Image (cartoon, rainbow over all chains, first blue to last red; front, side, top):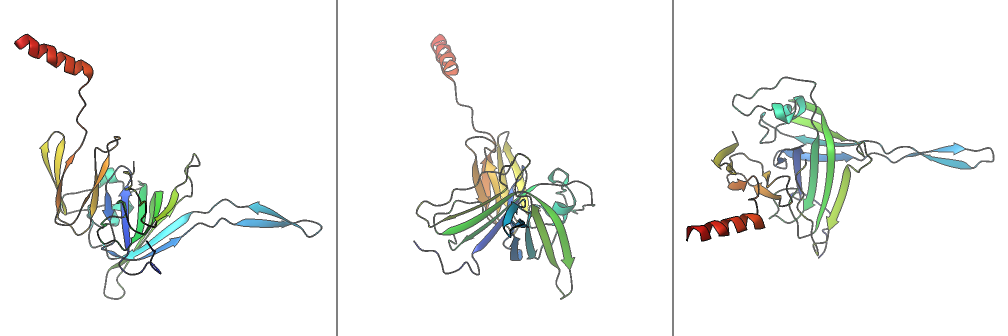
Length: 190
Length: 71
């Protein structure tokens, strides 16, 4: 059992699910992932004799940015527009699909898995070989920026995730396995 | 639509993934028996919504006495 030198091309999977909904794998439509983990910073307060008092600042929010090529408004596929504009209970499923912007906001779970095991088809699946997985819960899709500057409709979309919920429970989990025990399949996000 | 849902009976649906993304549904969602079902593009899966209720001792006893009564 050995981890690769690095997680490279063809190793990442991304599953996105609204609270109470199904996971859809976005890996086929996205080309880049950028995780801006919230800082756990501190301030140093200088005292009279030159000492420093370390004052922790609360952990900041984490932002996950994807670049990709969603092509329609179908939420059973890699849609971002309906996910951005309204909640899953208001998603339309019959063609032609349409969505208007609203004040509704939905919570999402974003799961990113890196593995070289090609039999694994979802980021939420059980993995019995080397793998690294990040799970962000209670995220919101805060930004969707489509651009057609290079003769291709490219969308940059961002999920934002507070480090903890109101009760102080963690919203962010990272896990890895060398394959000896493996990672379990995730439960539904509900 | 990329996902076709057919109702087989009150507790069973068949989901056909006609899209290009893997979709994960959860059989027996919200119960201790919950398990994920990953449906790849162009594949389908039959999913039970709720686990079948285990027959209680009282149910079995009632059935037994009913069978005896029929004899």
